[in-house]
Image (tube, rainbow, N blue to C red; front, side, top):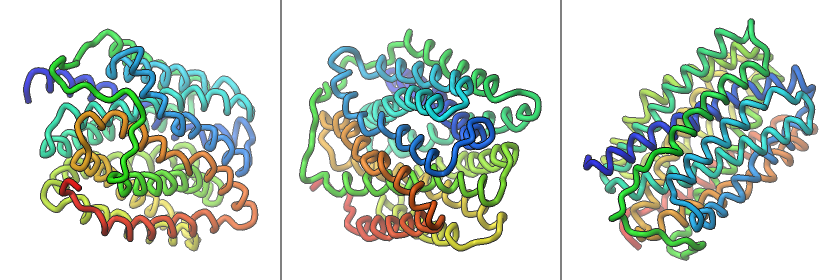
Length: 377
């Protein structure tokens, strides 16, 4: 790697790890906090997660934020906002309190993600980008394991406000560090600072939309299923997330190399076949062990989502990467705004409906993935 690439890699490593620590800590704690402390039901949890996705839907605004500051500065500020949001999440055990802190936390997380993706794809070559993305996700997995162990070890002795505060405070400190860094390379091609929609990117847009819809069913209803139906405790959920991240730590560098060897289409096919199996099993299993195993397989399969990002890098013009990442991130969250609330409502009739819907989305993704070609259109 060149010196500018090394600087950017360190910056992305710290900020990506910070972002994942914040989100992992929030995800690990929020379901038990919502059920035990705030007394939220499935419909209210669906509403909370719909609110969580509003900043993702609005992440297109990142393009206009870049009119005011550089990409790396905007990324650092986003991490700082995420940390503040997580740190106050345990202070308001009510529906509206959870909604407000979720919105704050989510704004930081969802504004950071397209910037992280854009910088990764700009600074590294077609061959290097999958490997770098794999390394970043592996490092994030290690950090998430530490979060899971931390929460597992202290869940019995510390309350929710303290746990949220410690995780969020650490993330905020890393965000402050990043604000004072300048890893940019002045020779990089300038990015378009306006919305870019191109017909030849339509497969990327469609896969991104379906990926976002499917991810919401995993994030909201798979975790809620384990807590509500199978009565997983906070310690058990923490342990499960640790296992997920151990698998991700091992798998992500391998996935990066597999993209270079086999191509995006082959790996997408594996991901979506696994997703179909997982959702059908969620819908009909009565075993808490099988459900937990599917949770791990689901998490493993979703690591292949990096294929969509590297596919964009291979088909997009260089100046399109930042705006296309932001547009893609917004498209990813179109369904995410309404699926949690709709799924929560459908859950009240039959909890299997959201998971059958997830299987249908995975079938659509599988069919669409067969159209993926990595040659420039």
